[in-house]
Length: 248
Image 1: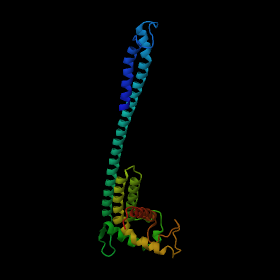
Image 2: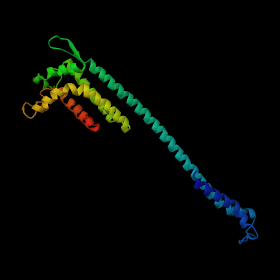
Image 3: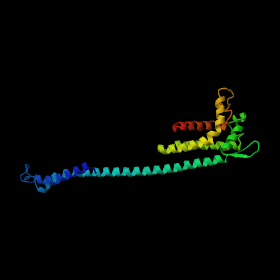
Image 4: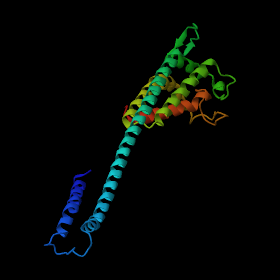
């Protein structure tokens, strides 16, 4: 209850107490001698005032209860949001850690010694071989896909899924920025780096060659079709975040 509301209540209470006294005195300008029993007179005078005050008090009590319920509901919703954010935050951080581990597990044999190269270097070596197999790169199906194709494709797919989980979350800006920076760092060093050379060769050759992919009508001669659109999407989002966070 505010100070003004308390003041009005005290004034009404004072009027209820003083009013009957004033109106029943001999020196009052109003004569109640012919109005029946004095109790009926006082009751008739005070009843409307009491009824009005009661209505005001009921309204104030109801209003206070509504505000209290709203505050409680806001607190419940805030706590639920924090719990949802905490769950999604842990899921995203775990997904990023798992993807880093999956990238480290990628392995590809060297042509000369058949020694397995792992991690980003293994991806780089695999893409070097892929960039020479022009005919196979224009295959968008799964007929000629090796386990290396499938593994790398799953890494790209996981990167995209993590991006959308962050983008579609209702995190506060500060928390979303934190997760976007984690994703940026992940793809920058582990995904974009090994794809940088074949993507540069595609950019240099796309306006000079008529050898377009018969399936998607795009020029991706140096990158298998299964990777082309996914790595382009990842690269676009990478550049957006680079601009956002001013990574020059």
